[in-house]
Length: 245
Image (cartoon, rainbow, N blue to C red):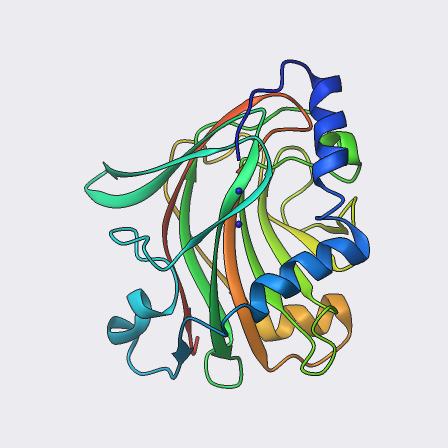
């Protein structure tokens, strides 16, 4: 969703993120993502067929990352293609860093409203308060972005996270911008080191958290970050795709 460097302490991490996240916060964050979404148009338009025919074309194919672009905030989380548990996956290792990957893609939520993905998280950061800037780190995040059809800078995002300490099922506004809603799909130690299949109705979530009907998704992203807390995390991402249900 990301340039390089090591942050040696939590304080330094917070300073670095406060500088870098000027792009990530408030209006400036929206403008940055809007610029991403408008450069050259979408990579692909998605018309759903059978899931087996479309799952790799829609978003992340763990065997081919060529359609994805880096999204840099602070430091560089390392992403590599690996074989694990008999499947191809993207391995993320974050050492006091915040970077990820995004893909511009137009998805009609009237046809395919459900986002489906798999992930595996090896560790969390313990009792940190993710609702505050000092704790705004997640071992795994999957983003869905939607821009306004006329005012492209009004980008809004849903961030589905594996939370450190917030209860699964809870949600909160990003500590940096009201344009992003963070949703804890999973939380804490339960299920670490195991693969989990997730699904979310994105159309319903935009209505629930932003109070508006959204028809099109304009980009998808994923990120493992630990620059605020100065910690280390390891996570794996499987395929990400949209489906009718």
